[in-house]
Structures are given as C-alpha cells and as structure tokens.
Amino acid sequence: MNEEFRGDAEGIYGLCLSADCEVSWYAQDGSHHFTTAQTETPIWTKDGADPVYACYCNEITRDMVRYCVSRKGMRTPEEIYAHYLDGEPVCACAARNPSGQCCNETFEKMIGEELMETLRCKCG
View 1 (cartoon, rainbow, N blue to C red):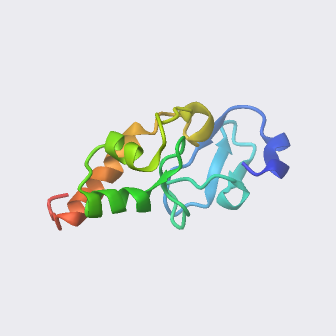
View 2: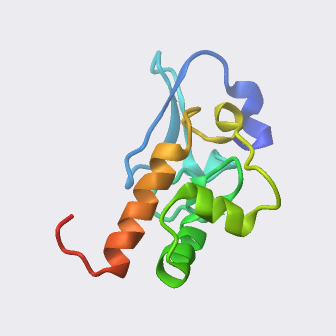
C-alpha cells in the first residue's frame, strides 16, 4: 500500500482478486477499502497491472516467464530463476506477495499458460 495510506490500515483485511474491480484491499468489518490506485505493489490478477509478477520475491514478471518459455524452452521456476538470478532465489512471500502466500502456485500457473500459448494449445 502507498506510504500515505499505511496509517489508515488497521484491523483485518481481505485481498480482492477480481480482475475488473478497483478495490485492492477491504476491511473485513466493511468499514473501508483501498483501491488499486492506493496500492504500491501491482496485484497480478487485476486488469492493467504493470508489471504482472509471477514471483514477487524475486521480481520475476509474466514477460520474463513468456520469454523463457517461448524462446529458451524453459519449463520450471527453477530454470527461470537460474536464468535471471545470481544465486538462490529469495523467499519472502509473506512480506512481498500481496496475498501473503507463496508465489510458486501462481508462477507455475503462468508457466503453464505461456506453454499453452507457445504451443498454440486450445485445450485450456
């Protein structure tokens, strides 16, 4: 969340993952919400998110995944990490991923989507 709004964020919040919704975070008691314009880190599921992160911890984007899958033939997060990082990947999902959850599921899903696109697969 942008620095100017952090003081307003008390209580328990939910993350809105709907692509076409401007709400990013909402207070579970319904008292208020924050919009994508008030959010510092782009939420990968939102329309217009830029960049779209596959891995927030290591700043691996959908475009980077697309390149590795379509041009380099890579199929795993480990291969993509090795291509872009000097050393081991950092795992800080609780702090860096807006969902607070591990990035691996989203990362692997993006690899699968890009692989289907590369192969022009219509089965998905």
